[in-house]
Image 1 (cartoon, one colour):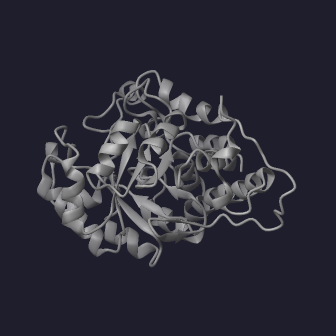
Image 2: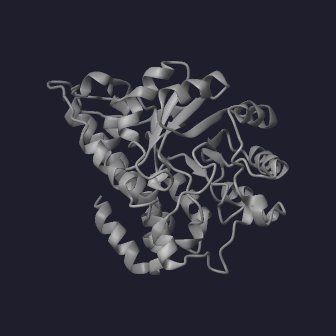
Image 3: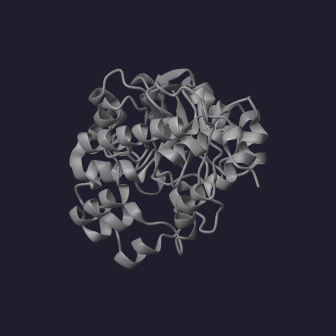
Length: 343
């Protein structure tokens, strides 16, 4: 799938401030660009003369079976891209056999997103808000609606400065809101993240929900180990799509250190800059259990609704299967570290 062409098509359909909000990053967008470029720096050592007549991309994440390691990253305000919002994304992800991580700042309540794709695998992304009681209510609602894990975003104590939004004087359109937050009665500064949170929030979320917790936004091995020590079932290596600290290391570059620090104590996922099936192969070879994809899913949503989302996810799955065959891997368990050319 030509994701560059798909993004250009989406750009033509969206108002410029909305496209810039979805596509842009923080500061000079150094981290945004490098997240993509870093995957190209990972070189592969393919095997030959392996029977790859059948290639299987299926895997599990926290014990949940999914069609491929490609999952939908949590992104806010899907109704900016399509009137059907997160429900359309959920239907497209389910059709592709993919797990969706639904954002706290979704434009649809978690119950409605779940109802749009009954039985589909889904996790719920969590910000710890200044009004912690409100966070607790949202988490309890997600658990009751069948979400099977929480994804705590840890890299956003405050928002990064996104210059495209500043230049455009961007604000959400009047018909776009955070339905889940508003339903809980949070207003004003109460919907802002709490900048004082620490590792203790991992245990608090586990006890509150009874669900496993993944911490997203980890770029250091010591932080990853501390998350697992505090009870995390997994960590997601991420620089928040280049939207937080500009100049932060690319996820592809941070991934090996995190994997080494955790070992087999927890699962590791990665997002940021993944644009091809071969990028997924690289991530798996570097030790990731799965990857999360954000902007390409949004471009699929903008251009084709649920069908566009399904097309993006299936396209990446097909590209992964091709890359696996060319690398001599029949299933994801054979995508191992020896496929990576070490410096």
